[in-house]
Length: 494
Image (cartoon, rainbow, N blue to C red; front, top):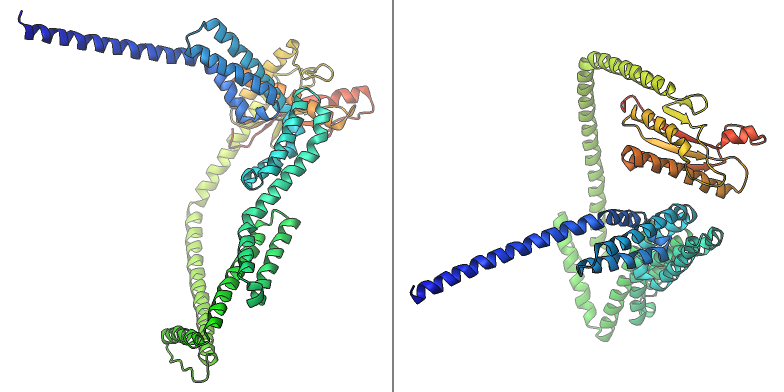
């Protein structure tokens, strides 16, 4: 075999080996990616839920611990360490993230006003415009959240008014900076060029409009449109004052410039007069041609209003004719449409009654009472009870909730509200939180066992605010401690 042929064979073999090596590398990378997705998918979904609920706000320390372990697990996987250890770390992460979600449920109630104040401050871009005040609010919020995380709800609640006030102040200051900050700078510039001496009236008007804008924001920070309007007027006046001052200073330096200044204005007025169809003369000064322009402008405005009125009348006539035509066509098809509508409504009513009767027959008198209230079907779970002060669903009630699932499946589309209620014993706010937690527990149970879209189910806690019996007797209080499943339906949803 000659040298050239041997060289060619070696080169071909090298290329094949390289292709095989690349193929193995790609396969390994794909396998690694699939393995990581399998290991981390459950944790990643839970993490996404935590972030969507802003649960990290209510349990910062627990969230930090979870993320530290998460990053450790990710690094261990990258380094090819044992899968058992990685799974163990991810399990710890999920435990902490679940705690975060539990804290979020209580935190959303405890810090309801704070979350709204914080959101408004962020919308006003407070971190950029008033970073010091906003950071103070954030630090106070984190401190209170840590108390909530330690289950010291009372101490956390106590801090709410102070935190809310800090966020609201940050929001107001940010709004002020964004709306009137530029105007303040312009007025400062006007002061620097001595506009307060050369154009005192215009300068004072700019200052007055700025004060009015600030007064509007101080009295009602939601009146941004009114404050912006005043600020824009103040900006115009401040710029006007600066321009006038510079012109006056320039003219004072050279008295001969006055003639050129006036002649330039006469040229502008003359051009306007030509466009309006008359000849301007300045032998008596500027007032006569300017008044001529004003009178023509007034006449044009009157003519414009008359033309607009005429157009509106014509439009009204066209609209009336269009409506008449539409009415005629609707009447033409009306009888058949009305008949179809009545048939449809009767059929929907029949189906609804059949399904409601089926639901009424599912429950014993000890388990639930099925009620109708307007467009609502209420399943009052009198057989479902909770341990005192807790929201844990005990196993003996799983069969009752299975029947509830069967009832819900009879109505596949309508929204569902789970209402928690308590008796009047104890603190109002505590009862409200407890009733909400119990409603959430039922909601989570149904979601876990039915595969429903979470947006379809709403959990509400009314505490003691909606009694159905007297709280003066033990029997009445027992009736008031309840869970109501409310299915809101319409004929269309069936």
